[in-house]
Length: 452
Image (cartoon, rainbow, N blue to C red; front, side, top):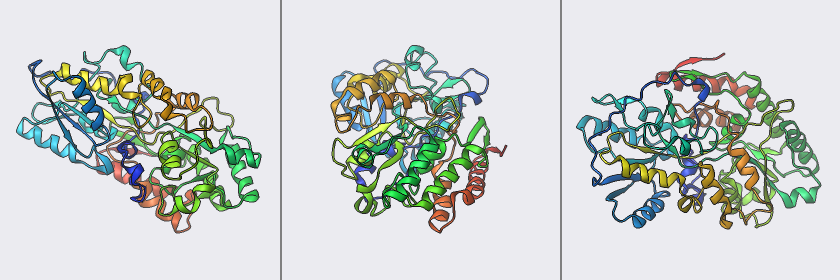
């Protein structure tokens, strides 16, 4: 999971190996998009025999190699790089170099959504964006419509789509069904019920947990899902950050209450020693779809047949449910490619082919491919109940008000909020500090910041 980047603890190397967990993952608000304009895309002279260069991270490399093996007549050079993990700017730095020298650009590249914020903007002497607008004659509109609702939002700028989403990490309510049944508890459907259950667990089963807030991406599970406008793009150059919005303060109060009660841990699920000391006492966890395989199965070693997933929570009185997203990468096609046909065919296969997606490590953004993924026993037989309906519902409910910005949303949370909470301060107390840090980062990369 890309946004963006997630600095997970080294002890859980099994999780870190899945680069998608580290991806930047925020999305742009489609309602804030500027008026549709020409993409200013002028293709290079095309040569159907030209070799394409593909940059992929180690997690996506097997998929690229599978395509290469199945299509031996397509000339390809495959390069492995960091995939923009952990906030790397390697791709941007190299593209800037290629812009100056006039050559060297990869034809197809796996990256984080944060990379699209610069790759979709004109660069270099050609005044052409690095990423080609895929909606300009490359990928059919009917294909683009089949991606999960809002999942292409990080790809969209000035009315055009500059990437294809590889995967998403929609947030759901994970729960240990065996323990919940044993304790006689009902699965909550609202945040208020979740809070009440957390208070009850603290009293009746002290030591058991319904959540944790100490990871570098915990804010995406809780505050993004709560529709907190921590970083909301109102246009391409203006960022709204209002952590005094009721959606933010209600979530802070809720979590403060459960931290005080003892049923939400200030430590992170990926914190050092957490799996060893607390894995068996995690009753519930509000987190991304990859938690099932890479947290509970790989890290916590929760036995098969115990874990289940429930639909995202909503506030009482609200008719629509929204959720957050914690991961997911993108594929971009270079506007400099001399073989756009081959580059587009590869990027499309990687993001839309059932043959590739059914064995993907994480949930595909392309809805038909997600059905193939869910049909794979390896992606569902571990669970106590069928997660298919919950995953599909949540995939279309990711709130698009959390902006895909030029900076990682993890930095302010990790550098300001987590140390303050560790030192004993409440989340409510840290909201102004968090907002100030977001504003500072936003201004440093050229955004105008508003707070209302």
